[in-house]
Amino acid sequence: MDRIRIVGGKSLNGHIRVKGAKNAVLPLMAAALLTEDEVVLRDVPNLSDIRTMTDVLIHLGAEVSFEGDVLRIKANNINKFDAPYELVSKMRASFWVLGPLVGRFHQAKVSLPGGCAIGTRPVDRHLYAMEQLGVNIDIQNGYVLATGKPKGNKIYFQIKTVGGTMNALMAAVLADGTTEIINAAAEPEVTDLARCLVEMGADIKGIGTQRLIVNGVESLHGTSHTVVPDRIEAATYAVAAGITQGQLYIENAHLYLMEDVVFSLCYMGLDIFEKDNGIIVKGADCRLKATDITTEEFPGFPTDVQAQMMALMCLAEGTSTVTENIFENRFMHVQELVRMGADIRLQGSRTAIVRGVPQLSGAQVMASDLRASAALVLAGLAAKGETLVSRIYHLDRGYDHMEEKLRVCGADIERIKIKSEE
Image (cartoon, rainbow, N blue to C red):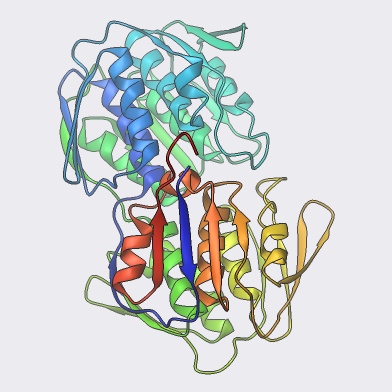
């Protein structure tokens, strides 16, 4: 129950390096269950979600070690095939072990998932994919029971699903025959998983598109894989440069992974360009310009940057509109931003109207989910006075030592340790 204390008004200037994407590492960890050989993942961030997935794999019988930013997984002695509620309820990404367990061992018992309270995010599309592959699915006492060897078939997702596409891919690579995944998610994290599976010996065509062809193979082998950079972390620090009128060199960030975010930020008045292995983001000397965003599947504006962008809009000149098309309950940060002096009005559950104000004021605020916590930290960087952000365990799920990276660049920010008895 640590807190983050921020005294705003400091311009950020310096160098921040982003690591591999959390949303890529987690399915890659699950994919290591598909082989007896060691899988080595590089540039892995030190996050609580990574530790939770580590606990899941160790429960199943895998050997896992994490030194520096190198994660090693060897799943040659898997002796359990269940992912229990006490682990999966902490993080819905734990549900991604379903596909690998069914693919390699033809059985799985996985609790229905938990995670951030940003919408229902049902797993029906995951289960549909398994059933299309001939896997028997039964739900008992809050658990999904899956049995049977996957057989190649056509999977058509009526609605794109990142997690469903990943689970389908991992179940299909060892299936008998050919699987066609239509209307597949094409996010960089899905592409990274597919490329890693190919490195392990899988036969996948159409990587990076909405149509994936998977020819099942007998077995997979180990690999050493460098995780795709975290586009959400990079976008968050780009907003940090803008909201503090600073200049940051964000290493290991790439424009092609976040084109829609960059377009919106440049429209508002930021200057962003590539340099070496990263990007330079320059904040504007004058007040930013309002803009409108609509969250969409990749390559559209990512829902995971919506809250951070709203923090920036709070200080822009004019009226901005945010339309959330991915999750139905992702405006819980609005009331906390209003506590800091923002002028935001909700229209239903999907639209927010943001009227820019000249200044935000520091306040005590509470994070409701991972990206909301980042938005509140960003707002605190620009606010007048002191901001105290509580429930930052959400932040630790997706940002590797955020306060330390910001402090090196000039932020007046610290983590306050709270003893359990307090």
